[in-house]
Amino acid sequence: MQILHRPFCPHSRFLRLVLAERGIDVDLTEERPWERRADFLRLNPEGATPVLVVADALAIPGAEIACAWLDESGTGTPSRPLLPEGPVERVEVRRLVRWFNGKFFEEVSRPLVEEKIDKRFMSPEHGGGGPNTAALRAARANIRYHLAYIGWLAARNHWLAGAEMSYADLAAAAHLSVVDYLGEVKWTEEATAREWYARVKSRPSFRTLLADRVAGMPASATYADLDF
Amino acid sequence: MQILHRPFCPHSRFLRLVLAERGIDVDLTEERPWERRADFLRLNPEGATPVLVVADALAIPGAEIACAWLDESGTGTPSRPLLPEGPVERVEVRRLVRWFNGKFFEEVSRPLVEEKIDKRFMSPEHGGGGPNTAALRAARANIRYHLAYIGWLAARNHWLAGAEMSYADLAAAAHLSVVDYLGEVKWTEEATAREWYARVKSRPSFRTLLADRVAGMPASATYADLDF
Image (tube, rainbow over all chains, first blue to last red; front, side):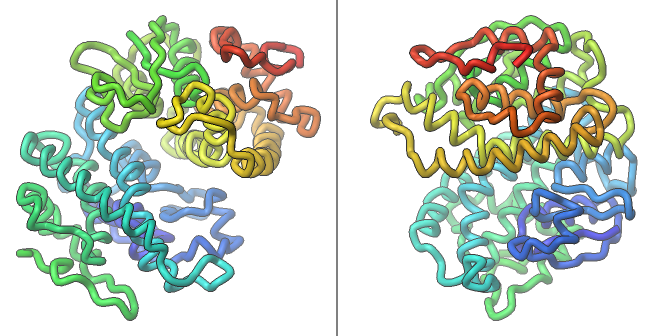
C-alpha cells in the first residue's frame, strides 16, 4: 500500500498513525495538492491529501474513509480496537474525530500549516509568500480553548472518548503534532492535556511522525522529546 | 426522536431524507445555531445543525454520524439499503457523501444559503444584512462544474455511486434541493443531472422537504414540481 500525503498534513498523519497501529507498512509519497497533478486528481477529484492507494482499482480518499475500509475489510492486525463495539460508544468517538478533523483543522492546524509551512513551498502563482499574520493570530487564539477542551476530556475519561484509546486520540494527536512542531502549543498551561499527549506520543506508531522535519525550519524543543 | 435542524440546512435535509427512507417519524425543532443557545451547545459543542436527539443520554451531532448509528444499531426499517454490503463499494458511496457534504457545501450550498436565507433572519450583531455579492458570484460559477459532475456520474452509473440508490444520492439531492429553492440551478443545461434529480425527488421521503418555505421568499418554479 501507498499513501499520497504531505508530511505535515494532519489528516495524512492521522492515517499514518492508524496504519502503524494496525501493523501495516506503507510507502509514503509526497504530494503537493496545490500543483493539481493530473494523476493525483484522477485518484481523488477532491484534490486533497491523504489518499490510500491499495491497488490499481482502489484508491481511498480521506483518512476517515480509509479507517472505515480498514475496519470493515479487516485489513491489518490492530494492536487494540480503535473503534468501540457499541453503536452508542461509537457516536462519541466519531463526534471527536469530526471535531478534530473538522473544527480543530479549520480553526487551528490548517491556518498554521498553510501560513507557516505550505506557503514556503508554493510558487507565488499558487499563493506562496509570507504568512498572513491575521490568520496566525486567530489560530493562536483558537488553540487555547481547544487545548482546554482536550484537558477537560482527558481528565474526565483518561482517553478522549472513553476509558480506551480510540480514533479520537489519534486524530487529536495528529493535529497537535504539527502545531507542536511549529512551537505553537503552550503545554505548561494545560497539564492534563500534556499528560494525555505524552501517552499518545510514546506509542510506537508515533515514531515515524517524530522523525519528519521541514527543510530549513527546525522543530520546537518539545516536538520529538517524549518527556517534554 | 427529534431533530434540531434548520429547514434549509442541507445537512439537516440529508438526515431527514435518511430517516424518512427508514420509516422513522421525527419531531422537527428549528434551531438558529448563530444564536448559540446554551442547551443546544450542550448537545453539540460544535454548534452546528443537525442534531438527532434519540434519548436524554444520546444526542448525535452531524448527519453522517447519525447515519452510521442508524445502520449499526439497526434502527428503523429501510425501504432499501443505503450503504452497500461490500467494503470497496462503500468507499465510493462515502467518497461522494464527503464530496457533497464537504466540497459542494463549501463551494455552493453554504454560501447561497447563508447569503440569501440565513442573513435575512440574523440580527446585525450575528452578521445579518444584505448578501455578499462576491460570495454569490463564486457559488454560481462553482455550481456549473458540480452539476456537470453529477450528470457524468448519473450517466455512468444510473445512481451516483453505482447501480443502486445510496446515501450519495440523498446527500447530493439534499444540497441541490436548497439551491433549487433559490432558483440557482440551470436544469436545462444538464439533462442527465435533471433526470437523476427527478428520480430522487419523486421518492416519498422527499415530500416533507418540498413543503418547506422561507417566509417572505417564494420557491422557484422548479422546486416543488416533480415534472420540472
